[in-house]
Image 1: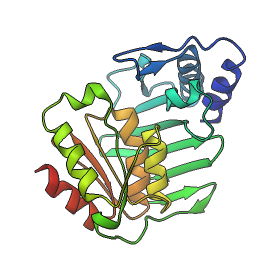
Image 2: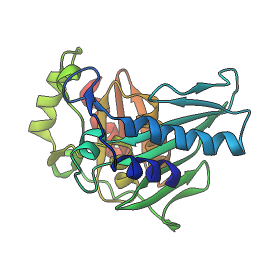
Image 3: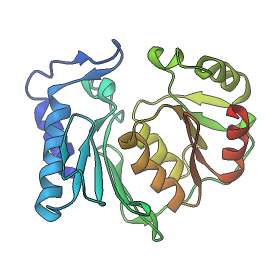
Length: 236
């Protein structure tokens, strides 16, 4: 992960050329591909037979049952705008049993790691989710960009959360928000139509930190079990 973050930081010395993908608020820069490529090269050097799937198009060894999901820069809008603490790099390894290991690295915040059955850490120190509290007291991270609001039920759920959550927030990088839940900084996370590289790294962190992470329809939800149950009840 440090290799990807280093490549991203170096790319800032050249024009980033941010450009929109799906909508104006969905950006990609040259640094995204450079960071993904740096992470993929490290993985290939150690695990040449494993598959790699990257947000920016990396695709190798598709038949392998071991698959690495890579997001070179999660939070590109913040990265391109040079907002401190608003981006990270993330990776997760899956096998036939699901997510096996993951890492989320934010240069301004540290390295979060998890291993299936072995717990979660931040900079080597164990982390745990917050004690559960009801939704009307909870700090909930979500993501309601314009192109997501047109999908069935998304706009309606956004209004429900505005009315029901103690605090609704969006920092930008979903993987880092999930890491904050694992570390007890946020209560819960709910997003629609989430890509695997934005979900798998942080979801394993949450479950290994004592929380729950599950997919219900188009909704990806994480946090302490009782709060996840309350959020699931809103979408079912």
